Image 1 (cartoon, rainbow, N blue to C red):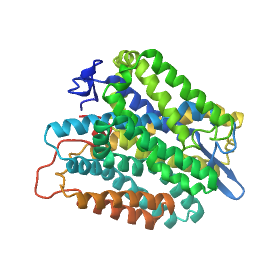
Image 2 (image 1 turned 30 degrees about the vertical axis):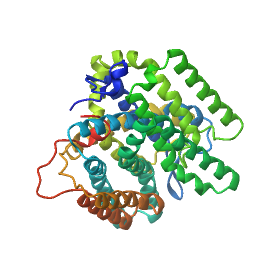
Image 3 (image 1 turned 60 degrees about the vertical axis):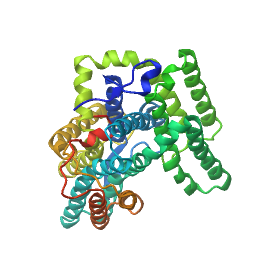
Length: 438
């Protein structure tokens, strides 16, 4: 499977990229690894006289602050998504692909692997209830599983709007970016002024769309045409503003907390990421072509969505196995953040990564199956996108239960059917091509 192709370093970068961008491939793979490690270190499981206790091990701790600054990679992930998406969209247009076909393909690439994992998790939750596991523990498992799925719904929205935003970028790039970023900051101001935290969830659109839009500037060479001094100053200024906002209480110092709901802090992180990627891209590219980094990058990029969707079920299984081991053997599990707990983290993290990789290998065929021919109906696509997002939102808002999982599967399947056109041959594009250009 081909990698993202990078524009050359000249002003002609915006047209006809021709070389593999192994640096972007490696950065995307590292983002996925960062997500797995962050979620794995946040898993806390102990056993008390009342039974197993599953909790967020980072709640109220000091160590989540440096960890969140090191592993908050989602701004970069969306920037890379914008970089890859606009290149794919441009190349599709050159082949005669319509915007409707582009969006329909994205729906298939994102929702199809989600149907499998949601269906399997729903069945497992039913099995746990039937086997006598207390309902509150099953509810916790369902809640934890759904938490990372926000990415799926938001990324689907961003990709569905990409053709419109790409057109806006072609017409007036600075205006398009400024309007999105301004809307995100306005939401923060309204939230702070009114005290209504729910307003912040409007930034599930504006913050991530802004970061995707930043990726367009990386793809068309605008960022790389700036002097190194300008890029360095931009990164430094964004970092200083972020530190100032944290110090004055405008934003939480926990960058993970700034995801729920998203805040302007993530935009500042994204600017830092964007500038550093541009400044270090040649060095990263040289490193990425070494055998070990290249093998790691290729492995992850072929299985990006599978790893993302399945790493939380893997972590929940590990937590359940640890609790069961404690109950059956009488072994005492160390309290989260204790010295013994930290001593066991390296093995825990390594196990999480290895098991996630094993599951991903076994399920890669579902991610990389060819997509069916796409509908050209804007109305069907609009309904399909709305239904797909609603299906994911159901799991996030209500929680993942046997019933909500079934409803989400049905909703996603209907969305997939709306996005396809019958009686036409399949296209040879895999799910990972949504976040990498084929």
